[in-house]
Image (cartoon, rainbow, N blue to C red; front, side, top):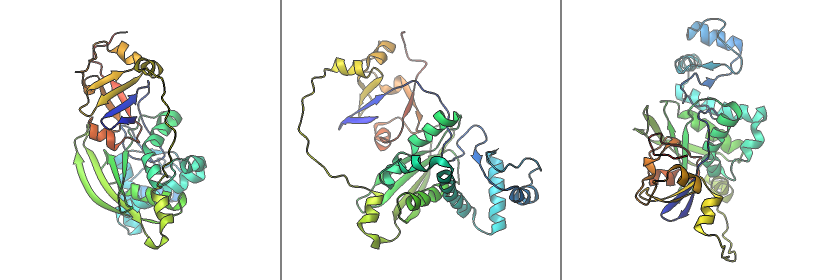
Length: 319
């Protein structure tokens, strides 16, 4: 999806599959979700004696625990170690990046963004790619939206249907900043709220990210937010008509700030012959990912995310 002007958005639809699982492991799933890699002795101690698991249910790698089992095991470990559960989740997030980079994903992660903001903006797309293309699972992943502030800070919005695990995001961000961009950052949760974006309720966590050592100067700032130099290019008048564009991009939909459709590609026009200037885009499709309200403001906030739309079955279609 991309902005084509100050008051319009253009998006292109493609047939796709649902489900998600990814590099960033959230619990957003209808099925058991989070892979925890513990050695058998650790599982026996924390699992059978403290968390009341049965022998034989532990697995060293690639075993999935239900939400209830995962929280029970994590709580028992935190109590045994003597640290808050929040610190355990943050350590898990840090371990997650260390583990994935040492397991063959290093090049992909390093290519995800030119700076920390670009990385966080691309997290949704990476998550969806790994979920649907690599693992083909049915998890519903979290959503991320990153905003650059004038003072050099980053504001990261994290959306999840699971409560209490947002500290995993802190651990992931710390590890990414350090291992990929060579900087140390400080992260502070500045807000939490519940939003009725879908069923069930979505938990929205707002995190402030800033350089841990201000003496590192421009190197740290550029690693967090890279300012691209503007260059002038000669203007060229491309002779492409609106009909040519609709032929080249048959699945696109262009809508205004009030979500009324302005024009569509030829496939969409064929599928919905009754579309006109009074048709609201919400009447013919819904957002599958990210799980946000279908509004111009939401689309603008997540413009760097991978949007998945589903055509409404109740819409009048003709094939």
